[in-house]
Length: 485
Image 1 (tube, rainbow, N blue to C red):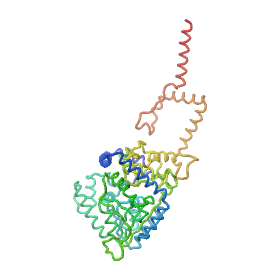
Image 2: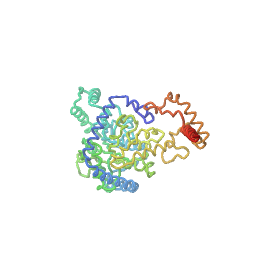
Image 3: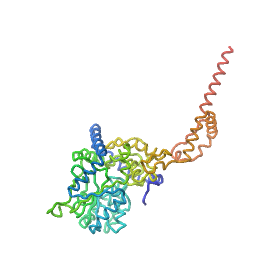
Image 4: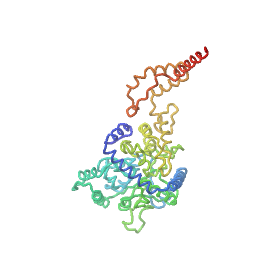
């Protein structure tokens, strides 16, 4: 079943009622938080790295137009062909066109949230092109006909029993097993054949270095290296915000990314791609062509607003999800978006518009855990509150974000307007409070989203004004009695 952000409340309710999802996520989140804590034993070290990374990303965003031009210039000089896509549709058309240009039919893809964002697999599949995921987690969810539920660990919502049953049903000749090593070897065996038969390899990009025209790719399984070197054509897909100024900016970001994501000091593979194989080099030395597709898809909307621009600092580590009490309990699919959890709640409105996502910014306790662990110090709670205001604005709605004011309720606006009118007139306020006090026994019968999980607040039997008047009357009577003596 394909979830959507417009059905968030129903999907969250269903996830909360599923004990398997609750158990899978609870165990996984506890494990990941423990791993992260182990590699950041000193809070002072983390804060120093965080400040450094925040400065690097903020400076890169401030200079984004110039850095993108420099990136294109240096990539082109290195032999990388650069393509620009304003929308998801345009990006898909570019990639599909490149595959057709080389008569490609077999495509292998490394882990890439950008390609998930544009729904590349569905687009290519509808055009008869077989695109297989090679990251183990992505391979599992692709077999299951699902979407990733976490940006770092796509199949985190599944346990060994579920994966064993999936392989038994979907992979020919495989017996049911829950042994993790056996399951991994089954996946590797299937994927190895795909690597060798592929015409096109597609990957994401973690950092794009403008100074040198270098594409940096972080991974643990070696599939990214295979995808970017074995096929004759490599297509790298990236959001425009992934650009950084220089190679010296990479180590702090890499250190924070790996430790925040999976609790590793460094990942197994850190690939630096600066161009296709050179003249006279053998086929095993790399692809004959490298293409870079740079995607906007709503990012310039966020960039245009100085506060929302902070959203683009994200390095896709997933730490905010791992520490979010809401995500931990409902999982990633409940959000109905490619980017779930706290970071998805502030990114998705720019990609999809507030019309589709106005429930997401409300799905937060604003506890601040996401901001505390964010390696680039994105003020997520403040941005969530800003998006809530944008969703409910009326005539003054900002045109800076699509769908501003889409959650505004005419009835709610009328209630508040009436309340303001009554509060400005003491006699009217007195009437309202007396009526509410008299209706006190009936209010407990009214069913609202608030009292589904909470005790219904009930007005006091008497208003504060009545209590004060009663006290004053009693005081006067007592004083008068004493006076007669």
